[in-house]
Length: 55
Image (cartoon, rainbow, N blue to C red; front, side, top):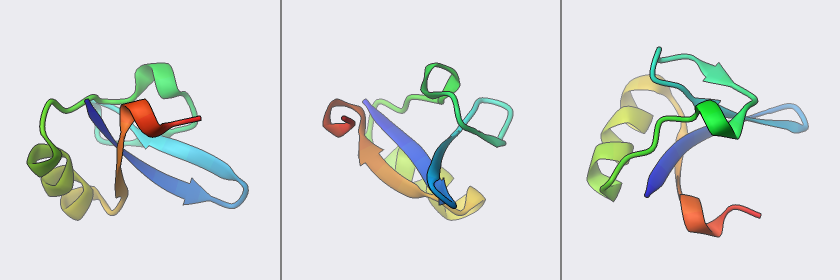
């Protein structure tokens, strides 16, 4: 799974289904393919990261 995130100061915000960035990982939209996540990142201004890679 892939997510879209944005660094806001010292906080990481995640793209939610409503199209907004919020600091809660549980609300993040999860995309099955990297291509889908890259499209959303391009539209909303974020960075793509594989969910398994988050620490």
